Structures are given as structure tokens and as C-alpha cells.
Image (cartoon, rainbow, N blue to C red; front, side, top):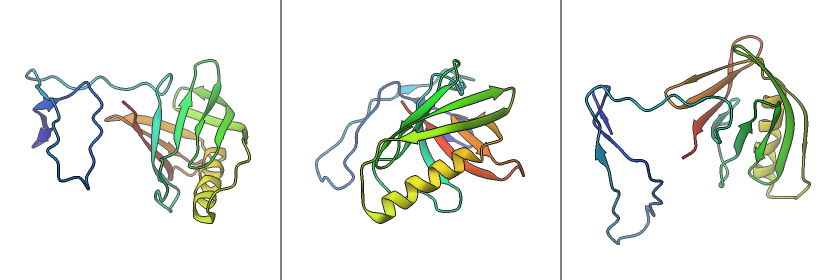
Length: 151
């Protein structure tokens, strides 16, 4: 929890909250030490949850994921299919190629989101990690994908 851009409370446990439940729900927090900021996530070895896909936002649950290894393997779960790819990262540049996936069929809007995800990954040219978010841009510098670091 932050107030005026100051970190006050943190949790190191993933909590599942049912917003439709009337039952009390408990989330355990600890007070952050003065000046304590969460560790910056690396692009590598981190699971990322999609937050935004090139102009369409995110429409499907479960949210798509993305993971990239230092060895150049990438992939995750789309809203419908599992996918895999090759990734090259050099400084702040990134290229995602050879994208493939399983072939399950889902609702048309879910398939459209998955197609948009794959198309955006294929256009990836640069990235930055900031405040627990991975942002991928195309070669014109336009943000085309945004991810949150998964717990």
C-alpha cells in the first residue's frame, strides 16, 4: 500500500480475494521499513501477467502470461492456448520470433485477444521494466504490451 508515492505496507504472500463474497477476507500485511522499496523485477525468469495488448486492453480470464529465459526461450499461457517462442534480448532491445502454440479453440473474443498477443509479441523491438511492470514497445517506440510481475 502506498500513500503519496511512499511505500507503507507490503505482503510477500499471494492472496486470492473473492470480490463477490460477503464473507470477511483477511490479507496479512507488514509495515515497510522507511525507504524500503520492492526489488525491481528482471525481465528474465519472471512470470509476467498481461495487462494491456496493443489497443484492445485485456478481455479474457485467465490473463495471458509471458516468461523469458536468459537462454532465449520464451512463452507462456495465452487466454486459450499455451505458446512458445524464441527471444533475443540485448540491452533494452528484444525480438520475439518463431511463435507457436497449441491449437485449442475458444470463444471468438478470446481467440481475437490471443491473436493480438501473438501479433504484438512479433512486433516487439524494445522493452523496459519499471515499478514491477514490463513494457514492450514496437520499433516506432509505441507501447504495444504491458505486463505486471506475477507473484
